[in-house]
Image (cartoon, rainbow, N blue to C red; front, top):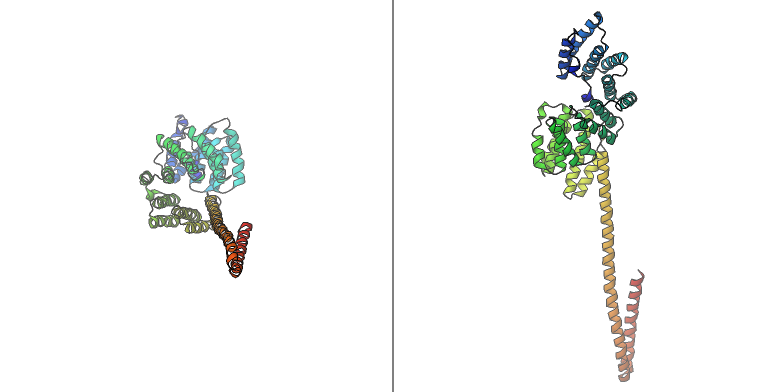
Length: 409
């Protein structure tokens, strides 16, 4: 993905028929753009040999040849050779934007981040005066991968989109950031609309990210229609794993748990060793979400905690933050439930006290009534009067003890 924004050179800039090598160069450039890197390299190396033997002094053309050779090596992941040719280009033209841009991307791919940072700083100075949507795309990738600053990454992606970038990369990256980081699905829909209007709406990465936004927006039918446009068999392993995982999310949303699990497990199996942990982390996050939405809180918590134990390579976007936010929200709900339970118990306790005091007050009334009767009994028979007074005293003391006990709790 990092090397998707390798800057090439515009063919129309190299149509000088007086240049004896232009036909071979155009053919090599076409092979490169078609992914025929071996054929492109073969033609370009022939051009280099002929240039050495000729009196050609067109530095711009020689720089362009070195850059395209470097790109071919980069695409073949022969990074040392790629770096060598980019540096040859920069030796002739120290301000050459494609060479600097592509050199930065190779450093990122090699995880040589100090070198990438140095080159990025130079490119940021250049784009202050010269707009270049490819460089904007690459700087977006730099901030996402090296600096982990998705806000700044999105800023550069949007600059590239504003320039009507002809490459699919900034649209896909912006969709991803709106989907996974900002959770702003309305903005994701706008980005897809722009990509579609510029003929990029059928790129698998863009379709998948758009389908994901639709699923999060609970538009299942449209999401299914979009996913059906992607030919999974034609994709590389990581892309295939991502799309398969999105199908898993679709089935979770459709309440087909077993089918969703099957797709997610297939996605984990498809992904390469470095990428599979990220897919697994996402799977457990969404599985936890599935249980949570259906009120199965303990299962949700179990799956979220399980996902935290999965170590994801730092160069990938991690779902750890989402999981932690979910667990924090769950803990807040538990605390709220505990507080509600305590309040409920307090209300019940007070209600019971009210009833008890009411009963005791009634008994106190009975006690005073008995005293009144005792007065009459004393006149009839002093023995009955004594018994009545003793009963009244016991009743009175019980009543008062109860009232004191309840009012002091």
